[in-house]
Length: 380
Image (tube, rainbow, N blue to C red; front, side, top):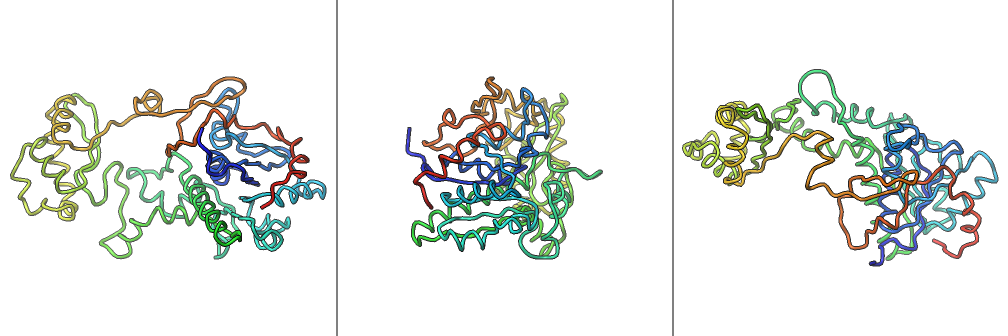
């Protein structure tokens, strides 16, 4: 097996829910030793559901390969154990309620003054400043506050994005920042204080709608599978009732689509449809023309034409369809002694060996290891 990039590094994460655990799970995947510090009653994400052999689907997803240590940080002896861990850590991550870490004496300024090589990463809902910085925030709340809900789904009742997109994106940004800080420490010898918020992560995802609303014609509206500015894009129904989705994204693809799928060569030279920008001005007209052609053909006839034109297309699948999808990569973890298949992380690297990671830990499963860690030689 290849040397892992973070092998020999210690990450201490005072974490719960999804955002911080997602971040630390990426570091564990890269070979870091991750100690998950939990309340004595455990991370409340353990109780989100009981779907996987009695365990939480959320918890086993983002806590593989970690060690669990339960500490009550209001107790002086447990806080002493926490400080002993941090004295040896390379990275400290926390996503407690606003101000809680600082009140415990675990604020990033305090820690880095005592441990200058330590990299601290605070993950919050709304950041370190601003009128909402002291509010609790969960994924749904941030989806709503950031405007993500306003561009998601079809007209009608509001709908949340069906996965914890703000938590995941914040965790990704935190992991990236930590890796950058580790590279910088190699050059400077000093750690860094990082701050990531769910709201900032979500707001960055909204960059295109934001720019369109602030500098363009108007804010994009909810259009279901339609795109607010690109045609042909979205779902269309064949004569046999089967649906497929198209994504024609440039002029070359449009020309091939007109020739082989619509079989209307005159559309290629029509000034209304000559460029992506001009097609974006005639979305409804283009969609009606496409549906008229596709609606007269079976799914097999349409996909034959799409394949000939090399037009990007796809099928609208359910979660059950994903389970059996021929393109799906999975890896196996053990849950209560039984193997569980789950989608593999997107980045494939030669140093990934999921067989070595282990399963998500039970509460305080590794508490007995705190004292040996205190006596270890590794220092930041």
